[in-house]
Image 1 (cartoon, rainbow, N blue to C red):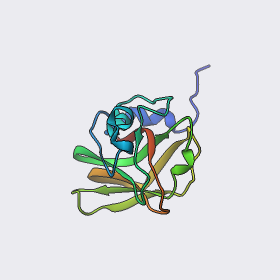
Image 2: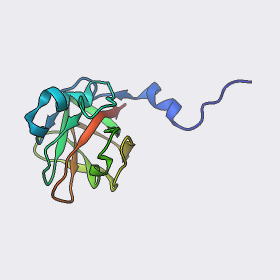
Image 3: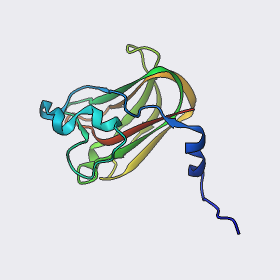
Length: 157
């Protein structure tokens, strides 16, 4: 009998690629300006840290964000966010997923209400894939917010 792989996940890697891998994200801030511990580059390096360091960590602020320039126009279908494993998962809440062809005008394509839990893997899907070069995640509610992202994947066709 042939093995059967349950669910749609067995197909995602066959026809989609992580367009964010090794791209240099722009961010609203870096916690304590300490890029050796909390650089935005850790969010797209392909490594999921099991520590509180070597992740992207923003300052506490009203609307922290992370934006990835995919370099080329890409047909984007969803983003996957690996949250900090050890603590503070609840900080990932009320996050919108936006796409743009430039860095000045974004359109919302997805939303995660949350709050998440530590170590959660959050997938935010588009209603339908859309084309863009810039993808941004942004917290939209609250005042003392921080993004703690171990890895950010942006899947394109």
